[in-house]
Image (cartoon, rainbow, N blue to C red; front, side, top):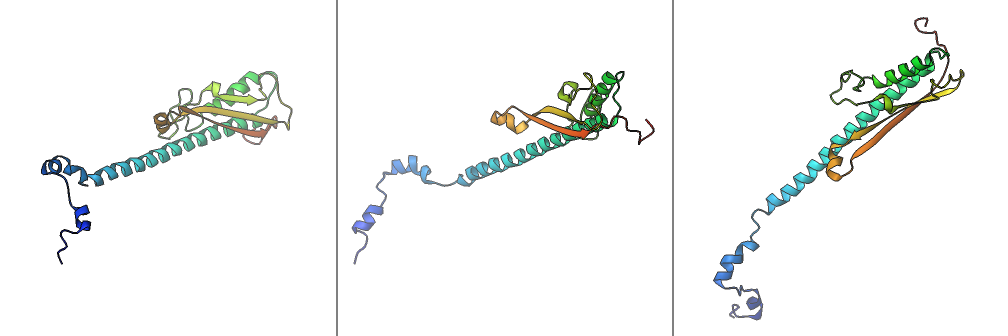
Length: 182
């Protein structure tokens, strides 16, 4: 039995002319498809890596901001507040938060971290503000620090700056003389 002229083999035969095969034959070729797939996979993997690094830097910024707010609240809770030192106390609290290690602060070069956080005095909010009046002993005092994190990967996605803030609340003791007799 001759199987070359059956209807099944006729449907599978290449009905194109030699000219069509010469010009359009390369469209069926899969050479280079692995390269295209690798480009997509590498792009996706690099996006994940860059996103993870950027998220880590944002978390590092949060840690510095949290420590700055804690340092300001700790100082506020321990230092005495009198009618004559209210402005100096406010300035000392802001300076403690701004000059926290890991922040750039006012003239302080980043405390040992490779990526420093720029905390400015306007980024520190004190409640209740000692410049307007002294809190009674036993009153909770809060220091809030807020900064804007410039996301490197977020700029590519159009996210812009990401606000990062932290606050710390401690009890105001008035005059703490437990360290150094001050």
